[in-house]
Image (cartoon, rainbow, N blue to C red; front, side, top):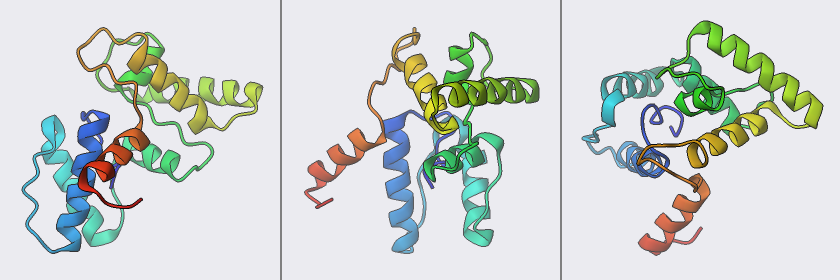
Length: 155
């Protein structure tokens, strides 16, 4: 769910949307969440996932693979594009092939997994070369811990 709800959404909002979405499904409540700029695409993917346990999208599938620690997964989004000085909102097929190849080379040289290298690039772009108001230096674990502390639930 975290990968499905992620397009064009910041880390904190994505985590909260995911928790609310899972709760809505679990308790059979209507899902009235607005998923930001990618709302229509996200809702289509959620519906598909609920019917088939599958979803669409290169970024979403690679993000899911990275979350599952699947080596070879390279999630390329706006921030990874920025790490490569590419000024596009979403990657082209050429960008995906090029960046994936470079990330694999770096991972091999550093004895790391591809998803680890990609995560480092993403964090670098989000914190160091981010010239927008959307600076984030926290990962999902930070916000998840804060959420559980706020709701007084045990982790």
